Amino acid sequence: MDIKLLIDEIEELVTPVDNGSPLSGKEQSNVEIIHNAAILVNGEGKIVDYGKRDDVLKRYTLTPSTYVISGKGKTAIPGLVDPHTHLVYKGCRHWELERRLSGESYIDILKKGGGILSTVKNTREATEEDLYSLALKRLSIMLSYGTTSVEIKSGYGLSVDEEEKILRVVNKLRNNVKQKIARTFLGAHAVPVEFRDNPEGYVNLLIEKMLPRFKELADYVDVFLEDGAFNYEQTERILRASLSLGYRIKLHADEITDSKGACLAASLGAESADHLLYASDECLLKMRDSGTIGVLLPSTAYFLRKPFADARKMINLGVPVAIATDHNPGTSPLYSQALNMSFAVFFMGMMPAEALVAATLNAAYAIGLGKEVGSISKGKRADIVLLDAHSYMHLFYETGHNLVSTVILGGEVVYKRN
Image (cartoon, rainbow, N blue to C red):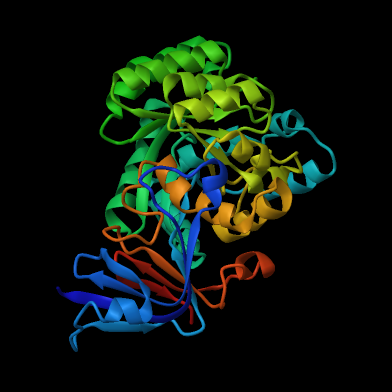
């Protein structure tokens, strides 16, 4: 067998134990830890074997063409997966931060020209080339923090042409970068100003025009179910229409109030319900039974100084939990899943192994990529991150310090610090 790459003498290899489905309950902490390990990758960029170095190497004959990366003093983990981002936008909202810290409400900021609609205005005015360049830079930053797969939502266009423009950018990124990208249509992010007095008209536009038109441009449809965005009935209509067209679905659920979004997500078989700060136990149990993944966004709670979602409770109830950065210009301008993992451990009651699973395997399943990435497993794509640390625990022990030394995507070194 042709071995293209050997990652040799890895001090610690840590990976979720992949049983073919998201990990939940007690199994969410099920990780394999191997010391003095090696990983072999073939010419197709797939993992051929991994394990104890001596055991792996005696099973294969290497050739002079095999590229060798030293793992001495390093920890190998699967590439991190970010299952909830809003990466395609123009403009920032830094000026809102001090106002928010001074106690101004979102509504007050919105009246002064801020909030999501200010991002919509800037994004509508941007060219497709500008948006592509900005998003490409953001993906590059994420790569330097070890993120190898990303979900990207639209949602800052809020019209047929502008949402299509954003989705074209997402597809161009997908075709031109090595990171895996899942595409989500989030036209139901907010009601645009031109439909302020006719939200039902906008819902009809979404269902009748946008959903059929974007079928080849998106994998998922997402809706922001909340007071001030879309109500339960509108959300259900949009999601049912999406399912009828063959989309997979997601849901912004129970972020500000208990809107029963988690229950709706479970009843419709959504791949994930995201945020879940105020989800009831009743709805969480329905998510557990439906297999809907809870995608938690600790960095958003941190940035907005909100209560954190109760990850400990969700794991104890048996809900498979993932975490994401929610990268966006207003409520979470964060790039690092590693920092997000620390937030999950220190503020949400997760243990380090649970947080690693949440940011790799479970995150991959939350965006339909669990069979391809999210763990160091035979046959999976060789998306691997080497940390400049002798244990993955340093991700939490050295919170805020970027430990990523090398990023490998599909068996190719795509990032190396310095």
